[in-house]
Amino acid sequence: MTEPLKDNTSRKRIWGLNPNVFFLGIVSLLTDVSSEMIFTLVPLFLRNVLKAPFTAIGLIGGLSESVDAIFRIFSGWFSDRIGRRKLLAVLGYSISTVAKPFMYLASSWGAVLGIRFGDRIGKGIRTSSRDALIADSVSAGERGKGFGLHRAMDTFGAVLGLVIAAIIIYLVQGGGLELSLKTYQWLVLVGVMPAVLAVLVLLIFVREKAKKPPPSSSSGTGLSSGRPTAGFDTRFKVFLAVMAIFTLGNSSDFFVILRVQNLEAPLIQVILMLVLFNATYVAVSLPAGILSDRLGRRRVITLGWFIYALVYLGFAVASSIWQVWLLFACYGIYYGIVEGVARAFVADLVVEEKRGTAYGLYHGVVGLTLLPASLIAGWLWQTYSPAAPFYFGAGLAFLAMLGIMTLIRE
Image (cartoon, rainbow, N blue to C red; front, top):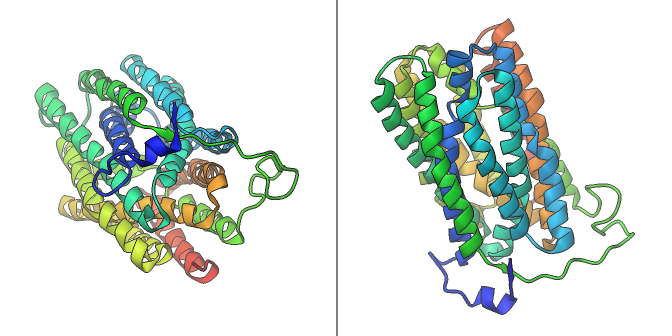
C-alpha cells in the first residue's frame, strides 16, 4: 500500500501536480458518477415512490450526512497513528461500493436509511484519510490548486452521472413530474459499475510515501492525548466553531431538490438543473483554489458564504422555474469557491503530523451538525412553509461570515 518516499516524489507530475492528486481525482470522479445516479434522487424516490413524510426525509438526509462524522474523526486520527492513508481510503471506498446495489431492493424508508447508513460509514472511513493524502502530496504554495483540482474532477463526475441519469430517465419514463420505481432501479443498476472502477484505480495508481507512525506522547501535543483537539492552534478550534454555525443552517440538499419539485418543475428539468449546478462547481473550483493561494483562504471562504446566503434567500422567495435555474448556477459557484478552499485552510492551520486528525475533526463537526440542521429544516418546512428553511440558512450564513472575518487571522 505504501511506496518509498523517493519513488513517490520522482513520479512524473500531471498538470503540474503530484500524480496522486490526479488519480485521487479520478477515483472521486468515478465515485461521484455512481453516487449522483443512485443517491441524488433519493428524496424524490422517498417522496414519489415510497410516500415517506417530510420529517422522515429530513431524518434520512441529516443522518446520512452525519453518521459518517464519527468515522471521519476516528479514521483521520487512526491514519496519523499508523502513518498510512491509502489503506483506510481503499476500505472506505469498498464499503460504499458494496452498499449501493441494495438500493435496487429498497421498499421502505427504513431500508433506505439502513443502506445510506452503510454507504456513509464507507465515506466516513475514506474522506479524512484521502484529504490528508492529498495534502501530503502537495506543497503549501500549491495546496489551494491541488484541492481545487481534486474538487473539480470530483464534481465533473457528478456532471457525468447526472447526464447519464437524465438519459436513463428520458428513455425509461420520458417527461412527468414524479420519479418511477422502474426508472430508479435502472439508475442503481448502471450506477454501481463506476463505483467498482473507482476502487480499482485507487488500488493500482495511487501511491503513498512511507511514513513512520508518530511516537505516543503524554504531553498535550501528542496524538494519544485525551482531548481530540489537544495540540491544535486556537485558530483551528475557532474555525471549527464557525463551521458548525454555518452548517446548522446548511441542511441536506434534499430540501433544495424538494423545493424545485414544490415549484412544479418536471423531473427531467430537476436533473438538468443539477447538471448546471455541478458544471458551475467544476468551472469555479480550480480558479478559486488558485485565488486562495494568492489572496488567502479566509477572504475566499467569506465570499463563498455571502453567495450562499443570497442563494438561500433566492430559494425562499422564488416563484418561477427560470429563477430556480439561475439559483442553481449560483449555488454551484458557492460550492466551487468554498469546498476545496476550506479543506486547504484546514491544512494551513495544523501541522502535517496531525492532518488526518484535523480533517477528521473538520468533517466530523460538519457531519454531526448536518443532522440537527436537516431535522430543523424538515420541521420548518412542515410546520411553517417550504421557504422557512432557506431563510434560516441564509441568516446563519451571514453570522458565520462575521465570525470568520473577525475571529480568525491568517
